[in-house]
Image (cartoon, rainbow, N blue to C red; front, side, top):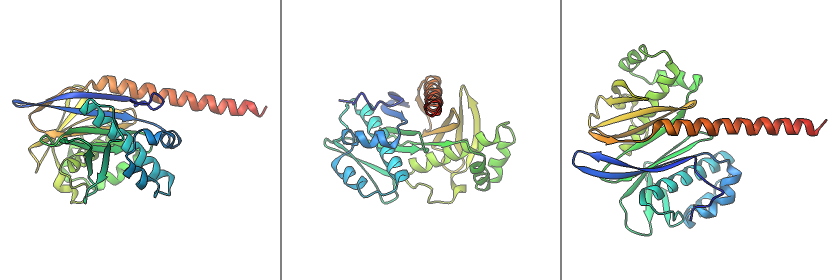
Length: 270
Protein backbone atom coordinates (compact mmCIF):
# COMPACT_ATOMS: atom_id res chain seq x y z
CA UNK A 1 0.00 0.00 0.00
CA UNK A 2 1.20 3.50 -0.79
CA UNK A 3 2.82 5.24 2.18
CA UNK A 4 0.69 8.21 3.26
CA UNK A 5 3.80 10.17 4.29
CA UNK A 6 5.20 10.08 0.76
CA UNK A 7 2.49 11.18 -1.63
CA UNK A 8 3.14 12.41 -5.20
CA UNK A 9 2.03 15.89 -6.25
CA UNK A 10 0.07 14.39 -9.14
CA UNK A 11 -0.58 10.81 -10.21
CA UNK A 12 -3.01 9.50 -12.80
CA UNK A 13 -3.65 6.93 -15.49
CA UNK A 14 -5.02 8.07 -18.84
CA UNK A 15 -6.12 6.57 -22.14
CA UNK A 16 -4.29 6.63 -25.46
CA UNK A 17 -6.30 6.15 -28.65
CA UNK A 18 -4.19 5.39 -31.71
CA UNK A 19 -6.45 4.81 -34.72
CA UNK A 20 -8.45 1.69 -33.77
CA UNK A 21 -6.22 0.67 -30.84
CA UNK A 22 -6.54 1.80 -27.24
CA UNK A 23 -3.79 1.81 -24.64
CA UNK A 24 -3.28 3.04 -21.08
CA UNK A 25 -0.50 5.25 -19.72
CA UNK A 26 0.48 6.39 -16.23
CA UNK A 27 1.91 9.74 -15.12
CA UNK A 28 3.50 10.81 -11.84
CA UNK A 29 4.88 14.19 -10.74
CA UNK A 30 6.57 14.48 -7.37
CA UNK A 31 8.71 16.77 -5.28
CA UNK A 32 10.41 15.50 -2.12
CA UNK A 33 13.69 16.46 -0.43
CA UNK A 34 16.47 13.90 -0.22
CA UNK A 35 16.03 13.31 3.52
CA UNK A 36 12.37 12.32 3.08
CA UNK A 37 13.11 10.03 0.13
CA UNK A 38 15.93 8.31 2.02
CA UNK A 39 13.69 7.79 5.04
CA UNK A 40 11.04 6.05 2.91
CA UNK A 41 13.29 4.39 0.32
CA UNK A 42 12.49 0.95 1.73
CA UNK A 43 8.86 1.49 0.66
CA UNK A 44 9.63 1.86 -3.06
CA UNK A 45 13.14 0.59 -3.88
CA UNK A 46 13.72 -2.95 -5.09
CA UNK A 47 16.55 -4.78 -3.29
CA UNK A 48 18.78 -4.40 -6.37
CA UNK A 49 18.07 -0.67 -6.50
CA UNK A 50 18.84 -0.31 -2.82
CA UNK A 51 22.18 -2.05 -3.35
CA UNK A 52 23.01 0.37 -6.16
CA UNK A 53 21.87 3.37 -4.15
CA UNK A 54 24.21 2.39 -1.32
CA UNK A 55 27.15 2.93 -3.71
CA UNK A 56 26.21 6.56 -4.45
CA UNK A 57 28.32 9.05 -2.52
CA UNK A 58 27.11 12.49 -3.56
CA UNK A 59 23.79 13.95 -2.29
CA UNK A 60 22.82 15.43 -5.67
CA UNK A 61 23.17 12.05 -7.38
CA UNK A 62 21.38 10.32 -4.50
CA UNK A 63 18.50 12.77 -4.77
CA UNK A 64 18.10 12.46 -8.54
CA UNK A 65 18.20 8.67 -8.32
CA UNK A 66 15.60 8.39 -5.55
CA UNK A 67 13.32 11.05 -7.02
CA UNK A 68 13.47 9.45 -10.46
CA UNK A 69 12.86 5.93 -9.15
CA UNK A 70 9.99 7.07 -6.93
CA UNK A 71 8.24 8.84 -9.80
CA UNK A 72 8.84 5.92 -12.14
CA UNK A 73 7.43 3.42 -9.65
CA UNK A 74 4.35 5.57 -9.08
CA UNK A 75 3.80 5.97 -12.83
CA UNK A 76 4.11 2.20 -13.29
CA UNK A 77 1.69 1.70 -10.37
CA UNK A 78 -0.82 4.02 -12.08
CA UNK A 79 -0.37 2.13 -15.35
CA UNK A 80 -0.77 -1.33 -13.76
CA UNK A 81 -3.41 -0.19 -11.24
CA UNK A 82 -1.27 -1.81 -8.56
CA UNK A 83 0.50 0.02 -5.72
CA UNK A 84 3.22 -2.61 -5.23
CA UNK A 85 6.47 -0.76 -5.92
CA UNK A 86 9.23 -2.89 -4.40
CA UNK A 87 8.51 -5.75 -6.83
CA UNK A 88 9.41 -3.41 -9.72
CA UNK A 89 13.09 -3.04 -10.60
CA UNK A 90 14.21 -0.30 -12.98
CA UNK A 91 17.70 -0.63 -14.43
CA UNK A 92 19.50 1.40 -17.08
CA UNK A 93 20.07 -0.11 -20.51
CA UNK A 94 23.24 0.28 -22.59
CA UNK A 95 22.08 3.72 -23.78
CA UNK A 96 21.07 4.68 -20.21
CA UNK A 97 17.40 4.17 -21.08
CA UNK A 98 15.30 2.88 -18.15
CA UNK A 99 14.31 -0.79 -18.42
CA UNK A 100 11.44 -2.08 -16.25
CA UNK A 101 11.62 -5.52 -14.68
CA UNK A 102 8.57 -6.82 -12.85
CA UNK A 103 7.79 -9.93 -10.83
CA UNK A 104 4.93 -10.62 -13.28
CA UNK A 105 5.07 -10.40 -17.11
CA UNK A 106 4.21 -6.92 -18.37
CA UNK A 107 4.90 -4.78 -21.43
CA UNK A 108 5.29 -1.57 -19.40
CA UNK A 109 8.00 0.93 -20.38
CA UNK A 110 8.94 4.11 -18.55
CA UNK A 111 10.44 7.52 -19.34
CA UNK A 112 11.90 9.61 -16.50
CA UNK A 113 12.93 13.24 -16.17
CA UNK A 114 13.68 15.63 -13.33
CA UNK A 115 14.99 19.03 -12.37
CA UNK A 116 16.83 19.64 -9.10
CA UNK A 117 13.52 19.70 -7.23
CA UNK A 118 10.81 18.17 -9.43
CA UNK A 119 10.56 14.62 -10.75
CA UNK A 120 8.25 13.36 -13.48
CA UNK A 121 7.76 9.94 -15.05
CA UNK A 122 5.57 8.46 -17.77
CA UNK A 123 4.65 4.75 -17.97
CA UNK A 124 3.36 3.38 -21.27
CA UNK A 125 3.00 0.10 -23.19
CA UNK A 126 5.82 -1.18 -25.39
CA UNK A 127 3.69 -1.10 -28.60
CA UNK A 128 3.14 2.65 -28.10
CA UNK A 129 6.56 4.34 -27.54
CA UNK A 130 6.62 7.65 -25.70
CA UNK A 131 9.08 10.01 -24.00
CA UNK A 132 8.92 12.83 -21.48
CA UNK A 133 11.22 15.66 -20.45
CA UNK A 134 11.03 18.61 -18.06
CA UNK A 135 13.44 21.53 -17.76
CA UNK A 136 13.61 24.77 -15.77
CA UNK A 137 13.37 27.95 -17.85
CA UNK A 138 16.80 29.41 -17.20
CA UNK A 139 18.28 32.34 -19.11
CA UNK A 140 21.85 31.02 -18.93
CA UNK A 141 20.75 27.56 -20.03
CA UNK A 142 18.68 28.91 -22.93
CA UNK A 143 21.71 30.75 -24.28
CA UNK A 144 23.41 27.35 -24.59
CA UNK A 145 20.27 25.81 -26.11
CA UNK A 146 20.18 28.50 -28.79
CA UNK A 147 23.61 27.43 -30.04
CA UNK A 148 22.22 23.92 -30.62
CA UNK A 149 19.22 25.01 -32.71
CA UNK A 150 18.99 24.85 -36.47
CA UNK A 151 18.37 28.02 -38.48
CA UNK A 152 14.74 27.00 -39.07
CA UNK A 153 14.16 26.50 -35.33
CA UNK A 154 15.65 29.91 -34.56
CA UNK A 155 13.32 31.44 -37.13
CA UNK A 156 10.38 29.83 -35.29
CA UNK A 157 11.59 31.60 -32.13
CA UNK A 158 11.02 35.00 -33.76
CA UNK A 159 7.26 34.37 -33.46
CA UNK A 160 7.39 34.08 -29.64
CA UNK A 161 7.65 36.89 -27.12
CA UNK A 162 9.16 34.73 -24.39
CA UNK A 163 12.30 33.42 -26.10
CA UNK A 164 13.60 31.65 -22.99
CA UNK A 165 10.40 29.67 -22.61
CA UNK A 166 10.36 28.82 -26.32
CA UNK A 167 13.99 27.65 -26.43
CA UNK A 168 13.33 25.46 -23.38
CA UNK A 169 10.20 24.10 -25.06
CA UNK A 170 12.22 23.13 -28.15
CA UNK A 171 14.86 21.44 -26.01
CA UNK A 172 12.38 19.40 -23.98
CA UNK A 173 10.50 18.28 -27.10
CA UNK A 174 13.72 17.12 -28.75
CA UNK A 175 15.01 15.39 -25.63
CA UNK A 176 11.64 13.66 -25.14
CA UNK A 177 11.90 12.42 -28.75
CA UNK A 178 15.40 11.08 -28.09
CA UNK A 179 13.97 9.12 -25.15
CA UNK A 180 11.13 7.70 -27.25
CA UNK A 181 13.79 6.61 -29.79
CA UNK A 182 15.84 5.12 -26.90
CA UNK A 183 19.01 6.81 -28.07
CA UNK A 184 19.11 9.75 -25.69
CA UNK A 185 21.13 12.81 -26.65
CA UNK A 186 23.85 10.66 -28.19
CA UNK A 187 23.10 11.80 -31.73
CA UNK A 188 23.56 15.18 -33.47
CA UNK A 189 20.81 17.53 -32.30
CA UNK A 190 19.93 18.59 -35.85
CA UNK A 191 18.63 15.05 -36.47
CA UNK A 192 15.90 15.83 -33.93
CA UNK A 193 14.95 19.10 -35.66
CA UNK A 194 11.45 20.43 -35.08
CA UNK A 195 9.63 21.12 -38.33
CA UNK A 196 6.47 22.90 -37.20
CA UNK A 197 5.06 24.24 -33.95
CA UNK A 198 1.60 25.62 -33.19
CA UNK A 199 -0.54 26.53 -30.22
CA UNK A 200 -3.22 24.02 -29.24
CA UNK A 201 -5.31 25.15 -26.27
CA UNK A 202 -2.97 25.57 -23.28
CA UNK A 203 -0.24 23.51 -25.00
CA UNK A 204 2.08 23.75 -27.99
CA UNK A 205 2.10 20.93 -30.53
CA UNK A 206 5.27 20.17 -32.49
CA UNK A 207 6.21 17.88 -35.36
CA UNK A 208 9.66 16.71 -36.40
CA UNK A 209 11.40 17.07 -39.74
CA UNK A 210 12.96 13.60 -39.92
CA UNK A 211 10.76 11.66 -37.50
CA UNK A 212 7.38 12.46 -38.97
CA UNK A 213 5.74 9.50 -37.23
CA UNK A 214 6.02 11.36 -33.90
CA UNK A 215 4.70 14.59 -32.48
CA UNK A 216 5.16 16.46 -29.20
CA UNK A 217 2.86 18.32 -26.85
CA UNK A 218 4.45 20.85 -24.49
CA UNK A 219 3.12 22.90 -21.58
CA UNK A 220 4.46 25.08 -18.79
CA UNK A 221 4.61 24.02 -15.14
CA UNK A 222 5.33 27.26 -13.30
CA UNK A 223 8.94 28.11 -14.17
CA UNK A 224 9.39 24.84 -16.08
CA UNK A 225 8.43 23.37 -19.43
CA UNK A 226 7.34 19.75 -19.87
CA UNK A 227 7.07 17.92 -23.20
CA UNK A 228 5.50 14.56 -24.05
CA UNK A 229 6.36 12.81 -27.33
CA UNK A 230 4.08 10.13 -28.75
CA UNK A 231 3.16 8.49 -32.07
CA UNK A 232 1.30 10.78 -34.45
CA UNK A 233 -2.44 10.13 -34.76
CA UNK A 234 -2.68 9.37 -31.05
CA UNK A 235 -5.43 11.09 -29.11
CA UNK A 236 -4.89 11.46 -25.38
CA UNK A 237 -6.38 13.69 -22.75
CA UNK A 238 -4.68 14.95 -19.61
CA UNK A 239 -6.11 17.75 -17.50
CA UNK A 240 -3.11 20.04 -18.07
CA UNK A 241 -4.78 22.95 -16.29
CA UNK A 242 -5.31 20.83 -13.17
CA UNK A 243 -1.66 19.76 -13.23
CA UNK A 244 -0.54 23.39 -13.58
CA UNK A 245 -2.74 24.45 -10.66
CA UNK A 246 -1.40 21.67 -8.45
CA UNK A 247 2.19 22.61 -9.28
CA UNK A 248 1.51 26.32 -8.60
CA UNK A 249 -0.24 25.50 -5.31
CA UNK A 250 2.63 23.26 -4.22
CA UNK A 251 5.15 25.96 -5.17
CA UNK A 252 3.31 28.54 -3.04
CA UNK A 253 3.16 26.17 -0.08
CA UNK A 254 6.92 25.61 -0.36
CA UNK A 255 7.59 29.37 -0.45
CA UNK A 256 5.34 29.97 2.57
CA UNK A 257 7.05 27.13 4.43
CA UNK A 258 10.52 28.57 3.91
CA UNK A 259 9.41 32.13 4.75
CA UNK A 260 7.83 30.85 7.95
CA UNK A 261 10.97 28.86 8.75
CA UNK A 262 13.15 31.90 8.10
CA UNK A 263 11.00 34.13 10.33
CA UNK A 264 10.86 31.49 13.05
CA UNK A 265 14.64 31.13 13.05
CA UNK A 266 15.02 34.93 13.00
CA UNK A 267 12.76 35.52 15.97
CA UNK A 268 14.26 32.63 17.93
CA UNK A 269 17.43 34.67 18.19
CA UNK A 270 15.71 37.81 19.53
